[in-house]
Image (cartoon, rainbow, N blue to C red; front, side, top):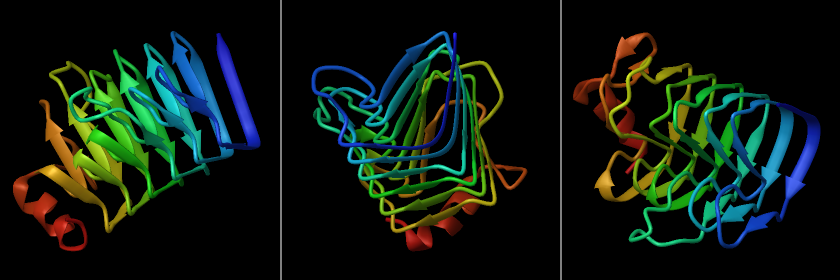
Length: 193
């Protein structure tokens, strides 16, 4: 199935016992353009969106104050987006502000996703135990995560590091066309904790 949403505001939506505060989708094509999501939450993952086996395209959208309500013990991840099981996702010209996940990926977690491409993204004030803005977890065959033209500011990883990005998968993310190394990730860490 195909889901297209444009020029829409989604606010105050909750999934108090599951995934995806606004959307929990599986096996779908999802196209979001000029969508603003604010103050959405879920218990286990994807404060705004959880996607499994999906193709997800996000353009000119904002995710603000979205969060997971579960604990670190529950491994709640993806304050805004939880990308699972071979999901492919592109995020263009979008902003993630003050999103929170207890375990990983304050803004976005890619846990077994096939690919994540971010172009001209802005990540500000997101918080998680690991990967204040973005976390890539789990070994998955597929394209590496690609980040081009993104800004990471004041994101916080409170437990295992990666104020901007935390990755524990192979291959590592690409930053501006280069494979991520400790050196270029540490350069981003100056404004992230």
